[in-house]
Length: 250
Image (cartoon, rainbow, N blue to C red; front, side, top):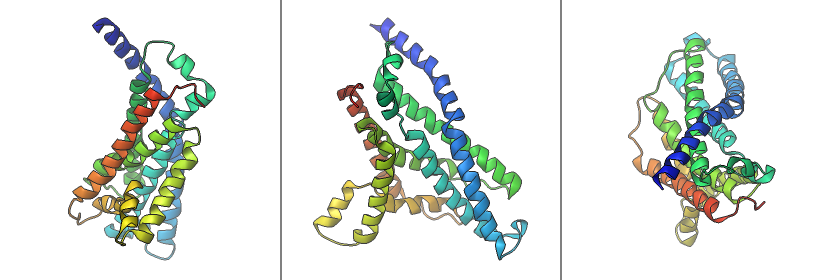
């Protein structure tokens, strides 16, 4: 039995470089290019009627960087989880992936982790470009913020991709509905307020992103726990769906 387990681990280890290659040839460049375009437009707008980039106050640049990080995390998570499981089902790739004794749950969990690590690498590359082109800046909360929000949004995308083939549009829809619902009814009492807790706690995202500003506000542990816990619960539920739903189901 231990020999079989070791063989599966060895096979999975051999998959990881290919997973990383797939990310850095596909989702990584897509994320970087879109974020660079957004950054260019944001900086153009900030300098159009104000000081030059070199003369911008630190507080203004921090706010631009905060907005860019939130855009990068959303787009990066969207690209990373789009079709992460659904595409293999839809295109029949699972027949080749699991012809060898590798557990689907382990494989897709590893894919999720590798893609999350890939997003961190892309984030550091873009932050390095920011340091060269704009100004050297490294908020202490940079990594924790990205990890928290990737788990929060990525867990939802992972579950939706495990559940059905229309994962990308359903992820956008779920987050949009959650944003609108929390804005409209988040301050109300009664059953409707508690029903909102079924939706992603996206109203806590701003508190997490504010950690990129200085002076840094108190760490919103409750928001981090709620966002991260919700995403982690969705991720684990996605693994359950993979185990119980045949991969050949469209």
